[in-house]
Image 1: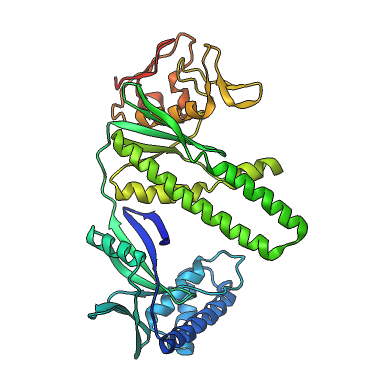
Image 2 (image 1 turned 60 degrees about the horizontal axis):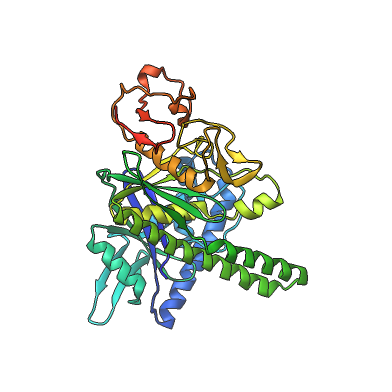
Length: 413
């Protein structure tokens, strides 16, 4: 499985793919000596960083001295300085560091009949051509280059592998007709496909098999901790991490298939880090890889020309999809059910996915002069939105038409 990192920078998307090498023993020794020297210089720069107030002062203070000590190319020294300056202030040492090489000044690629090489400029008068293994990672990299991605930077990792950094302009996409809302929770991810008219096309769950397996891992790790079996515990942690990553990828593949099937954009909540609330809460919630899920989903949506919307989670669990009321929502502490005074009793997770999709549809409306209606219970429909300090005349509030006892309907006013 290839390693993939996707992030949004300005108006461009960036991603990194790890490529394995087939370097000879002599080239491996050369790369190893260079990586050790880069790590030693990084630790030296870390010890000097606190004496400077800004990066410009830091670079003026260490640039020439670092170049003379190591003999590296100036671009390599500058990248080491940037990497060290971005480290957290509590960091004092690093075990290894990825050194970046820019194209074409300090790095280039060329091909022969049998191999593809990445030539790295380690020193001003010394370059090393590293052969790349043509496996699935290489096929993925070649496919991205053919689909409009560009590569201007290569990196040498502490494990002596080559990481490629790609970028592509993030062009705005036309909104699809429907919205696929996803509610992220501890045991599974509930989803709802909603039309602009308020009709639910499909509901269901993603990843229902993950929670039982995670509970098995937790029980097994507790037993190994009681026996002080450190080696087995370490292997168990690796198996758990690989299981989560693999199944997250499979689940995101299903999300993309559902979105394509119903011509829908994808909407998730804009979640932040939870505050610890106790041992039981931490075991269930704090282990959910929200950031990893969002990062992979963002990349897959970008590859398939699907817009990924992130909506405010404000009142998504307390809003009633029938009457528009905002209340406590849960039944006697049972968080699996949602109950409203209008008589609606539904699954809480599936109802929350409806609210996520509804918020995304409401935010689509470009009409800044729309008005909102209220239900027969005199609850404002705009309760879905977080209160704004702006005057009401300057806030875009799309109109949501709700009728008691009927499915939710939407109108753009």
